[in-house]
Amino acid sequence: MAERGGNAARPQRLLVLMLAAAGFGAGIAAAIWSAGFLPFGTARQAAMELPRVPGGFSLVAADGSTVGWDELGGRLQLVFFGFTNCPEACPATLSKATQALERLGGRGAAVRVLLISVDPERDTPGVMAAYASSFGERVVGLTGSAEQVAAAAAAFGVFYAKVPMEGMDGEYMMNHTASMFLLGPGDEILEIVSYGAGADEIVAAIDRHI
Image 1: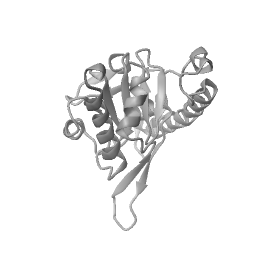
Image 2 (image 1 turned 90 degrees about the horizontal axis):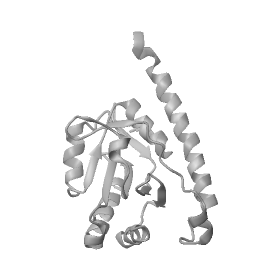
Image 3 (image 1 turned 180 degrees about the horizontal axis):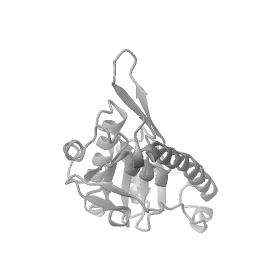
Image 4 (image 1 turned 60 degrees about the vertical axis):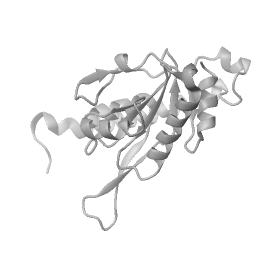
């Protein structure tokens, strides 16, 4: 049943944000290609301006408070979009990321991982807090309303979609971008760490920018 009043336009706003994500994602891809992310350290890459996360969005922290990107960004960090009911990709990626931070030791002490939920319907602040803490204190869980999550995903060019589970009424999984973003202190996307990267590969990526 359609919602009335001010909420009636909410699906339309959400669709606009998702379309923005697709468009911005194409822009990030083009920028990465032109910057020559592979191989790393080339003169051509150094001369190109790296794509930046535009900000202008907010999310909800573990304590239920609203935090803007201006409070979350501005440092060397890994950002990953996932969800707590994820059976494999999310826990595997977060485990590798935390292993990488441990291997970096003191030289990577300031680096953290932001985990942004793509399943705000189930991932409440409390659920995200418990899940993130299971990977260590340097993993920060964030969630928000459907519109807040869509705005964050649009800023990173991240895709996500609900996938109903056949034969299980009301149950669903989430299909989503499984790469991690390594951000610099100016919110520039330094590297995109592909899904399946090992801890040593993540260490090497961070080491290139410390």
